[in-house]
Length: 247
Ligand code: PEP
Image 1 (spheres, helix red, strand yellow):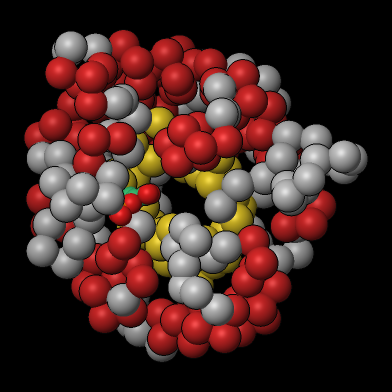
Image 2 (image 1 turned 90 degrees about the horizontal axis):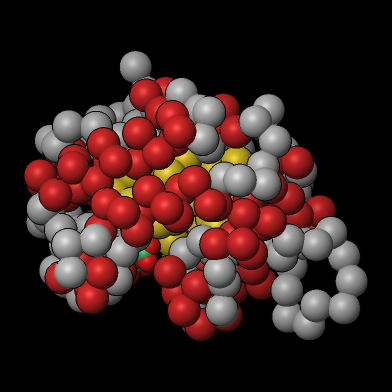
């Protein structure tokens, strides 16, 4: 049976490191019912949150890493800075693709660097609204999977997590349906197989406006092993309800 996993992507929240620590402690105080729980705080709060969660059953993830190990990359963080604080890192989030210009080529290099450093990658893929409307979601997502995994060593990818995040559902309050997510998850598993991986063994999360209200749709859907949660992860009660739905 695949691991059930829910990760909170805090994005550029909460506003202070002290509040990030408080939120982390609040999350750690809840019963996860056997579901693996992770939080991805902003880079500046990684050390403090990692420290607060040292003895807790909550894993810490980075939101992004650079593809180089070190050098003249203003504003970036490397895998060696993250290692020791986090068990893994998100790569390919649509907001990073949109705001920082990440292409599949860059995402592939980041993922390869994360895997080589022993960090668990959480690879985000998903189609835009226009691609969705044009009926191209499966083609786009399959292409992303194959391209993003191209550079990584197969060894180390056993711990890969994929998050299917349709861009049109992120932060909009309009999640996809469970049926739609299941269809795309099948596409992702086929693309993972095409990349030489055991697609059936890799956890796939759904992300995009998951809340306590909408989570049932995905927890009950075939092939979905958990959620990547943005907005709703900033409220410990609501996040706990999302986690418990996958128990
Ligand atoms: C995300 O950005 O990963 C996400 C899923 O955001 P939200 O839950 O706010 O749609």
